[in-house]
Length: 186
Ligand SMILES: [Zn+2]
Ligand SMILES: [Zn+2]
Picture (spheres, rainbow, N blue to C red):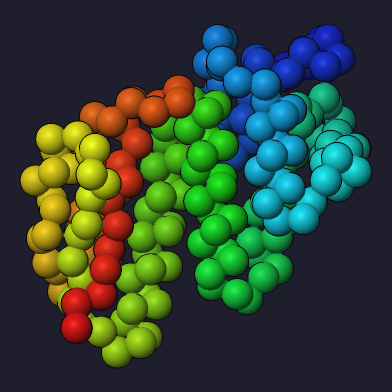
């Protein structure tokens, strides 16, 4: 099980701790350090925070941890800590972008589902009963079919129509980047 990994290799073959099935694509066309720091900087986190997290994870796991993995873990730490729903959603969305760049389709989809759920829950708490789906202007034909569809929030919570499972929008390194959103219906 012990693998020898060159330092600073970008961790291309490291197992992803939270997504055992998905490893980054071999040819990720992004500078993952730069992308990681970019994502973190939106939340006032910097290279020192990242370096600390890498060390902490490497100490706990007794193996090398790529920076992008530590960056995602840092985001998770902060999502857990914050009570601010808006901030939580922005952090989740930043993770979605990062996972898309890594080509982690399944993880990305899972976090999009969390975002959809948080939105639905928020609308329900505000007293709304229904939501409407709005797609991006340049969405794929499958998403287009969802545009304007209305759901009872309770039903949407169960059936989870978005993120659309059959979305065919290719973006970054993923093949199904649904950008449909819910809006509350007055
Ligand atoms: Zn969609
Ligand atoms: Zn789509």
